[in-house]
Amino acid sequence: MATSTTLFKAVWKAERQLINNQSGYHRVGHDGWPNKEVVRFRSSQNLGFAGQDLVRVETSREDDGTVLHEMMTDLMGLTGARGALPACFTERVLEQVRERSPATRDFLDLFNHRLISLFYRSWEKTQPSVHQERPEPDIFSRILQSLTGCEQNWQLYYGAAFARRARSASTLRSVLEDIVGMSVEVRTLRGEWAPLAREDQSVLPGMKQPEGQHATLGCAVLGSRVWMADKGLDVVFSPKSREQLVSVLPGGVYSKTVSQVAQQLVSGQMRVRYRLSARAAHLTHTVLGRHGRLGADSFIGARPESVKVVEVSFKPSQGKD
Image: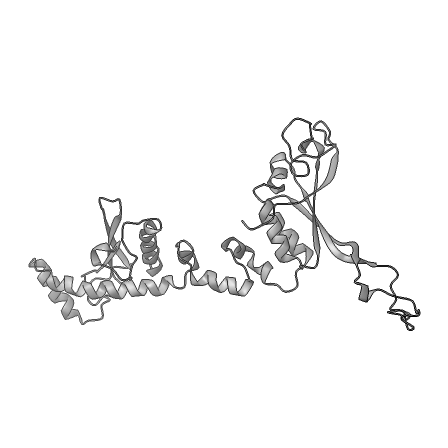
């Protein structure tokens, strides 16, 4: 038994031809000339129970290739077995149709078409998949962008990760693995030296500063720099083939995306270092006189005949895709 969902899907399928169509036809229920509608609804004139909302579909192809649909429905009509008007109106319409005078039927179909068109529009407003296919910005994407802070549509797929205030290393690893399709390891607590401003450095008491500066027990720091244990993290990619390796190197298909995702998921005060853990055979060794970008797609000491797993650093492309 066909339901209203079957009717909606049939209309949606008919409308999909307008995604890249510049012929001037418009979607169901929108403003425009009647002859520029891809779907026309008519109410089934029958006193019997059809058992389905979509009774019949007739199509015709225009010269520009657009397929027009005329759908006979048994839903929300003014006349018919499920119509809003008394049965005597349906009987009168059927008599006129048998007498080849369909004027009343066609007149009532003007209202039937509008009613069902608005009913379809109320359904499509609640369907994210319908809006996602259309070129214009949709309300669902705008809401998700506001909730997650994402700027591009592809980022909405990982909206749950971007929306979290507390982001973990496992979240970063899961997102990167899903993007690049290879094993990723995130090594946290990668420390490095951070410089201390002069006003933050410890100074022993002297002629100019009798009490010194930050010279009390527990507050003194020796030197002009301090070791930050959580200053950064390492993201290690483990490609299984040459193609996977090249995809994350500068100029690769995932290079900019990896850099952008890591910057958004990691605090701006942390430094992200990128490394490759791969077989030496997958790394292009540098040869003088040959084409190769050192540190980008070729590395010193990589021998193609070696089966040894080596780990090298690289810097992905910057910017937005």
